[in-house]
Image (cartoon, rainbow, N blue to C red):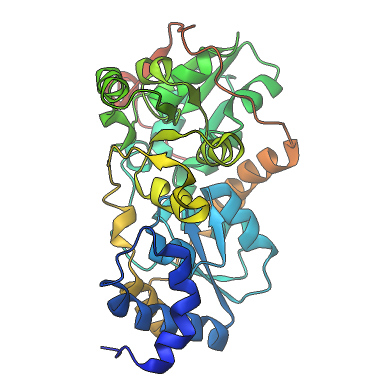
Length: 361
C-alpha cells in the first residue's frame, strides 16, 4: 500500500480541487497515492488513460488523459503518440480502441468489465439475421464486440445513429443490438428498422413513472434521457441524446435543476466541472461492469502490463472497416426530437433466427 505523504499531498492537491464537490475530503488520502502512482507510471511507460463518461470522478478527472464516449475515446487513441493505452471503460471499448490503433498496446484493467448489451449478440447471430434478411444493410452500435462489428456493414453511435441509418439510402435497415435505441431511431426516420432484443441493464431500469415522480418531488427539474432508455422514458423527458449531447445541454443551458437519465457517475463528473451552479437530481443506476475499473487495478495494469486486448486479424480487419466507414461518412448527428412518434419495429432474437440453421464463415 502506498502511503499518503506530504509530497504526494502537494502533487495531488490541484487534482483534488477539481473533485472536492463530489469526493469527500476524508476519502482523498486513500485515493491520492494511487492517483499519483498512475500519473508517474504514465510518464514512465509513455501511456495514456482513456476514461468513459461513466467512470468515477477520481478516474475521470484525476488520471484520465482523454474523456468521452466510446468512439471519441477510440479516435483519440488513434491520434495519440503513446505506446500504451489503458481503457478505463468496458471490454468492447478497449476492442474498439485496438481496432483503430492496432500497433498500440491496449490494456483493460479488469477482465470483469463486460457489458450486458454487447453480450446480447454474437457474430453468429448477425450471420443468421443476414440470412433472414438478405441484402438488408447491417448497422451496428459501437457497443458491441469486434466479432459483431466484423459482420456489419457500418457502425454507429447513439449520437449519429439516425444520420447513419438515413445516409445508407435504403428503405430498410437492420440496427443492432439495442432494442430501445432502435425503436427511438425508428421514431425519427421513415426508414424501416429491424431491431435485436438487446438492452443496457442500466438504462432499461428507468421508467416513465419514475420520471413523473421526480417531476413531482423536484418541480422545475429538466430531465435529460439517453436513447438506450425506453421510448416511454424518452417521451417523458425534456431532451434526449447521447452522453456527449447530454453533457453539452447542461453546459450550454445551465438549468437550475437537472436529472440525467443515464449512469449516475456522469452526473458527478459534470457537476465537478461546473460547480454548484446547477443542482443535480441523481437517480443512481450504476453500471456494475464499469465499476470494476478502479485506481488500484489501473496501477496494476500499468505496472504489470496486464490484460492486453488482442483481436484475431481476420476479425479485426473487417471490424475496423465497419468503424472506419462510419468515421469516413462524417455525418452530422441528429437529435431525438419526435419522441412521441413511435412506430412499429420488428424485434428479432436468438430464438427467432435459430430455426434458419447454423451458418459459419
